[in-house]
Image (cartoon, rainbow, N blue to C red; front, side, top):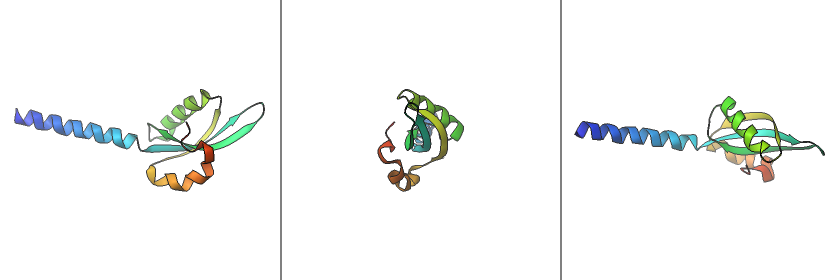
Length: 95
């Protein structure tokens, strides 16, 4: 019984650490709107730390606000936020 309880506690801690690390992923991207043409660079928190998966998530979230994703530049952790904040301006963590 004690071993089962220990196993459950360890499994729970592992799943929680995976969730926390997934919450610490960000993507920087370029997007556009047509008529009139508007472009922007932004930073968005994403649930996937892989560029391909982040690209799908970013495109979906931007589309709901009338923007079209042009490119996901990179996917990074919280250590890259400060250096991108000034360039993203009002699109820093907006979506």
